[in-house]
Amino acid sequence: MAMSFRLPAACLVALLLAAALAARPAAAKEYAAIFNFGDSLVDAGNLVVDGIPDYLATARLPYGMTYFGYPTGRCSDGRLVVDFIAQELGLPLLPPSKAKNATFHRGANFAITGATSLDTPFFQSRGLGQTVWNSGSLHTQIKWFQDMKPKICSSPEHCRDLFRRSLFVVGEFGGNDYNSPLFAFRPLSEAHEFIPHVVDSIGEGVEKLIAEGAVELVVPGVLPIGCFPVYLSIFRKQPEGYGPRSGCIREMNTLSWAHNAALQRKIERLREKHPGVRIIYADYYTPAIQFVLHAEKYGQVPEADAARLLRSAGRGRVQLQPDLQVRRAGGVLLRGPFQPLELGRHPPHRGVLRPHRQGLALRALRRPAHPRQQAPRLINLHACIFKRRLVQSCLQGRVWDTDACQIDDCYW
Image 1 (tube, rainbow, N blue to C red):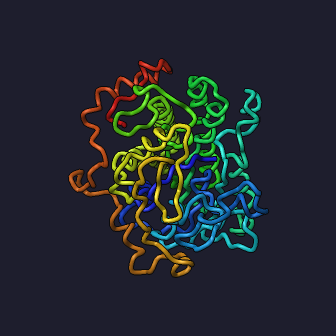
Image 2 (image 1 turned 90 degrees about the vertical axis):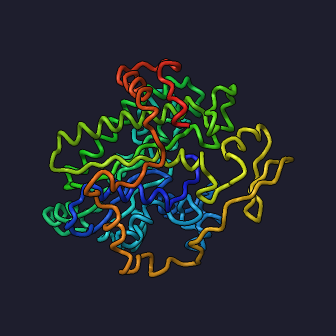
Image 3 (image 1 turned 120 degrees about the vertical axis):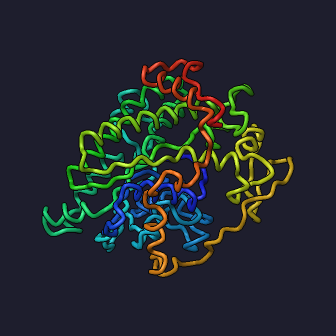
């Protein structure tokens, strides 16, 4: 299961939409459908379709409270990034692929909480069968997709035509794969050794979808797991082990960065192998770090760094108060998140964006005609280029020495 790390979905949606549409010609047609694969970050309810486990908190309030007015099985209090993408592209919210009596002609969401890139036997062969909760790996989800084809198209030719006009979102994948050795308290180097296997598996999944007819795919990287509250609570570090600005665990963020670097290299190779296919990497890492560094800009706790708050709580409890205020047990009361703007009990307009707004994404996110027209980056990395090259060389050489491969402070 992807760890609890709340991201402003409206901010991430611009990133993914830009990735999806950056390479589309100005006169391109609209997408006919979206097919989404992933884990709890984009699970629209597949985990709860066949019944709600007693231990599953996401099937109860406050999940779903800000948009739908009731829990939907999403690991969110409202919409997911893929929901925003569908709405901005004028498509209905994607139904979970396991939903009964649903129509999938405009797309489907195959994501399920706990999903990994690798299949379960990989973990079992390494003695990690008890620390991975794999309810449907990437390749299992692709099998679901293949089994669904008779429901959405009448012939192989019809399927290929539909898929050629559709957007495929593959991930993110990898977070739950790395959870397995980390929750088993294995050395961090073992999680690094998973990276080639995880990335190769993602690449294999992308090629399976290309073989089915996909020509436009978005492949997101992983989030900075060193900022996840669960890891900040479990793994206690010396002060120098935390980012001086973010309070996140540096070596775990390095793991995320290493995965993303390897994934981008894989995508480059896939582009060369499939020149007629657009494969876009979506960067979750950079904006997520910005949410941590500048939480007040995104409606989060403005007086304190959330990661430092969780870490300083130590063995105490960080509590969510009824009035949505966050405080440390016995500590100072901190102002909580601002009230969300999308309050409402039901999706407006049946979850489809009004026609006058449907063109906003296409107009705003096409590739600028000149580099100067590009939107400014969230973070200025120019001062980090030299160190990034050193780290890149280290990663390419598969040297996992902590000192040699440590990412510099520009990422924290």
